[in-house]
Image (tube, rainbow, N blue to C red; front, side):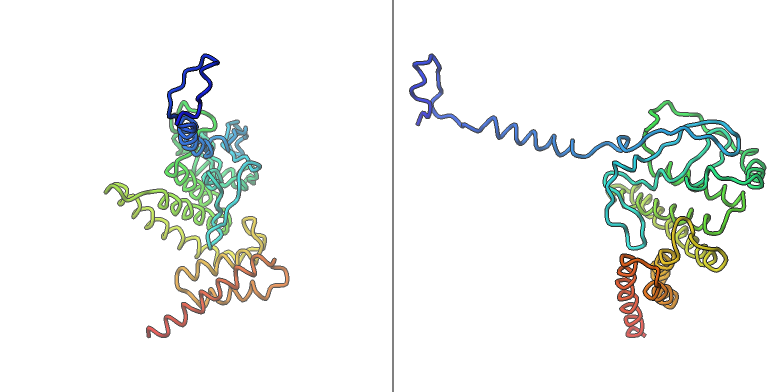
Length: 290
């Protein structure tokens, strides 16, 4: 049936049977695919370059920073590893001077006592060999290998300047989180990827262990807040890490501190209660096996 019969008087030629929505469907299908790709913004759209003066060599350089107003927070991992939509902000949690090698977590970079400046100059700057600067955009994203290397350099600097135990422990924690994220991003479709994924998992475990031991020492010797975290947050974090290493007595003690704390907020208490159920279940499971 020709739906357009009668239009001949207007000089229009119709082809009899016509699919009214053929072009629209094609456009919709093609447009759907394009729109899906367009919905995922590039990582560099979340970044900006900010000029920073090095506290050691006094030279100015630009570091990559995240536009906090643009990122959307997602549910964190059980151990509070932060997650954001479209970007891993942890990759940009470090600042490294390309001239002298001084590197630190962002919150520690600009405030460096004279004694620590001297130590960094002696133990880092004198031996540091700057890498050739790549010709790239100021907001070119870091890959995980680069981010992990920079955080390792930050940890090395923290040791050299005799930084606080908590600073070194947090460095280790962030490195383990980055390695976890890198591991999650890898597929197992090639032998190289399988080997890389296994190496990431092994290294993640090693740094996670160092972070746990470091924070255990820090809570016994330092005052709160610690690395921007209050006591309840650190207690909960330690409980998660102790649970991972099957140290259920430590996990139970830390969770009890959070649950009974008068200053802990409702959100962290709810997390602690959920974790307590997992610890109790694990303890019962261990007893039943024995």
